[in-house]
Length: 218
Image (cartoon, rainbow, N blue to C red; front, side, top):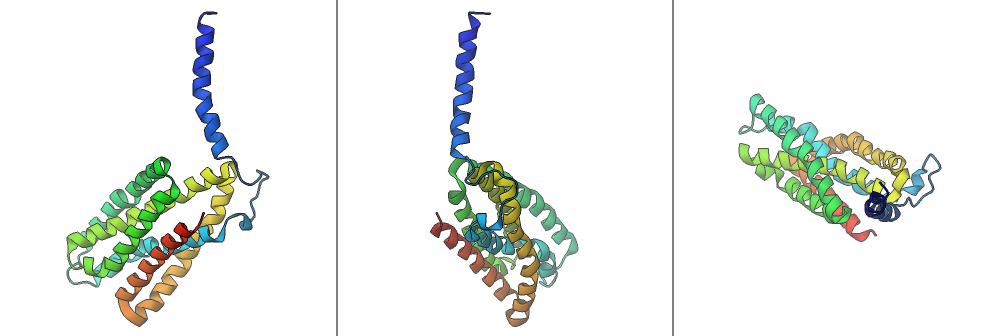
């Protein structure tokens, strides 16, 4: 047993040191004193979340309504299949993919491609609705990005703020709530002015705006 002790200590040290370095890297920037004031979360972070999530939430909530108004897509059974595949290969897969990608290459390097993919898909959405296959792929891509958004922000909050990350994310989550509340109101106003092309164009530009804010931030 005595001969085995040095080996056990060495193994324990090898196991512990990487974790100590990781803990040091993600040490909270604000003291863990309970509630975190909203001012502790930089406004650009909440604005990025709001601008980006507006597009994904809009498509998730209205893809079927939009599809039923298109002659080539007007099939309840087809649109139900679109919703099911988007939930599995879009929303769920996006959470796993972007969560793992963020762990590997960091938040910004993962988030910017997501915003560019979503923005491009939104700008092209009316054209992609010309056929059932491209509409299916576009809807899956949109929910893929939406799932990724909901995976990236909580992980980044924990990474940056450490033990206070959960409190910080609860504040950041108000951005998603704002997008869910104000997005449909803005979409209806745009729909009356310029139809679906205007809605998707504005949402696409919001996604690109989120990318620009992210690139400009530290």
